[in-house]
Length: 198
Image (cartoon, rainbow, N blue to C red):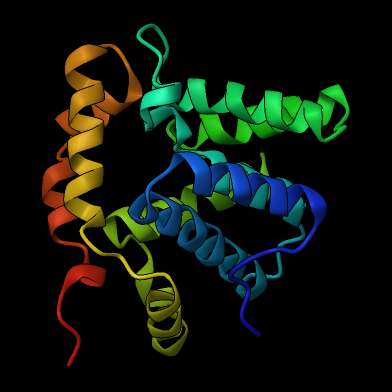
């Protein structure tokens, strides 16, 4: 069973907004992040709110795009605010809107366990797999190959690194700056998803 996308009114709206503001490279990363997260949840029998995870995954990097790039907030916090506004328009209650923001913010924080917050944990798993290849061995290679065929990477690694390096320069106290200082370039360059497959 392929778990690449979700088909609810909120999921469709999140995809529409992400596609409007993110380029194909960033949009495909967002979908792949959800797909890796959902497959991981399935493999590990984790119960989670699929719609909350999907909406958060699709919107998690919009703070890196020019219209939503805040000069004062880290990109994940700006993206969290985008999620709150969109989901308010979709009629989500305040507590669920806050959860969407929280999931997006926490994907750039210290590791969150599934027991603490399953959706935040899953978004961390999905984004880490796609950005740096962390945990890829736990996914069926056929699943990964099909996902990459459906949502190609293009030059995602280099493009994403340039975005977070820009954040790091302009916002030296943000999580992106710590991520870059911690060797992001090396990890991104080593991602097996960007190596030619035999």
